[in-house]
Length: 233
Image 1 (spheres, helix red, strand yellow):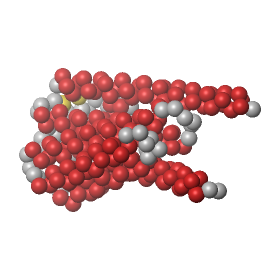
Image 2: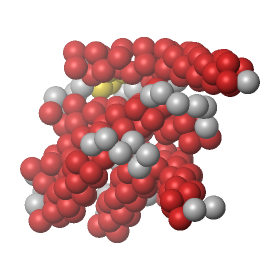
Image 3: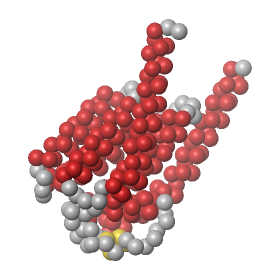
């Protein structure tokens, strides 16, 4: 094995490890954090910022095979992390809004990066499948941040919850977002503002179409891979 081949093998292992870490961090964010973090204390906010920073770093590592423009994306992620932590200098008022907006933007960018990994050309690998799961969870988290932002900008946007101020427990929005994404619709929280309704419709539509589109893409890549293999033989 040549030196170049060893480097490529190490890079592949690094990307695979980054994807596993990213999946674990997202599972903690969606399923564990809402149970553990029950207040808006300084320690809880620090834990959320550390978790977000780890998600962004592991996401860039997991998608490092997409070399085109990756340096710029990594730089943007670094700036997002710095701005997120700089938000502590303005703990109230605009600082909280800036922190939420930076988080939503950085997770959206990470989702776009995962999208190129999932739907791009290539073969069906564990990293591609893992990226599809990551992208689905990122959609739910981004929408959760968007719901929270809407509830702050337009008070009374949702019926069935009094969480319309900046002291909201974010787990409420994560819960509502994934209930909408999976189209379960328990009905305990109802969007009434136009922006909230529009986003809910969009998220429900994505939740319906995404699994079918991803499955079709994976099948087409698998068939194309087998076809190219048979042609070579």
